[in-house]
Amino acid sequence: MEITYLIIGCFIGGILGSAIIYFYLKSSMVSRNSFDELNVLNIKSNADLQNLNLKIQDLEQIIKLEKENNLQQTDLLNDLKNEFAKVSAENTFLKAQKEETKKIQEEGKQQFENLANKILEEKTEKFTTLNQNNLKNILEPFQEKINDLKNKVNEAYEKENKERFSLGERVKELALLNQQISEDAKRLTKALKGESKTQGNWGEMILESILEKSGLVKGREYFLEHELRDEDNKALFSEFSGKKMRPDAVVKYPDERNVIIDSKVSLTAFTELVDETDPEIYQIKINRHLSSVKNHINQLSQKAYDDYGKSLDFVMMFIPSEPAYIAAMQADQNLWNFAYDRRILLLNPSNLITSLKLISDLWKREYQNRNSMEIAERGAKLYDKFAGFVENLEKVGKNLDQAKNVYNDAFKQLSSGNDNLISQTQKLKALGVKNKKELPQSLKDEANRLCEE
Image 1: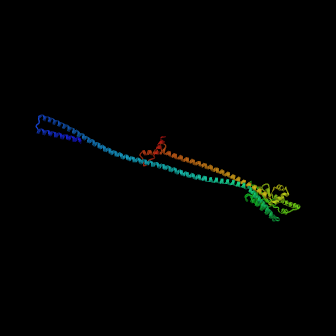
Image 2: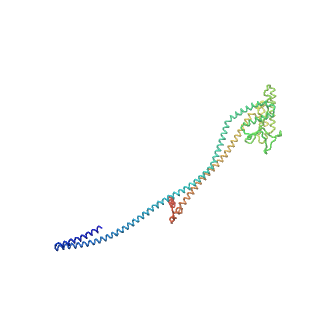
């Protein structure tokens, strides 16, 4: 525009200059030479003006071209702006789509991990619960057996220790009991002088009292007025009297043998010599007492209790009166051998207490041995239970390994090999399957890595 204004100004200036010269020549008297010079100048000015017109035309042409170029540049700029706006919009859309894809991938990965963890937790919890129940079912009886065994062992040892420590006290008690029995026997002597049946009942009462305090159990280790029977459970009869064999007491040994005890009281003759001071009369009375004791020995021997299949080779004859027993033994020092030859053992209360105590100790040892056998049996059962527990525990370990292997195999099917599930789904997507969600990128990378290996 500035060039156009400049050209127009030059053109107007030329016209004005020519007019001024023309009026100047007309109004003034100038010379011919001056006119020629002016004419030349005018011609030159016209020529310059024509040149300027040509330049103006060229410039106008250039301006026109520039305008066209400007229009083209403006159109191009507008196109670029539109393209930039389109690209910006597409970039914004792609960015949003990328964020959405990333979000979907993360959600998919999280969902897959949550699903896998949930399945694993459920299986683990179920398996753990099952194992806990199995272990509980195994261990509770196992613990009960251990506690039962422990209690039995402790009870056996505590009982043995108590009995061992109390043995001395028991002997003292039995000695006092024996002394008391002897004193009672003396007091009862007068009341028992003339009644043989009463004397027999008294002797059986003393025998029963000693048995009750011996530590043996009635009906298990000893029996009173026990009827003897053979192997066919038939009652046995005495060949001497023809009556059933019914001794005062039968004491069992641990080896299934029996000790037969029969109480025999000889107080009538003995009470007559207690206060006797005349030696000759005393000798007569002591011989009468000795004869009474020997008669009891012979009568007991004739009953043949020792022939009973389960009995020992001898029978115990119990004399409940300690003084009567001592008097008879002093009167005939061979009395004990006399009785033994007839398979009879003479016992006073002291000897009987000692003998029964020995039998009681034998039974205690027998029960301890039985307990030991039971402990051994329980120990064997306990060992078998423990072996079964170890076997089940090994099965638990194998099941855990199998579960782990199954999980690894399933994961391999998912991500390893050329035809793994992840690769197959990616190929389906490449074929144009429209999906809304994406697999986690970590699974894709793991599948690609395993395929490359």
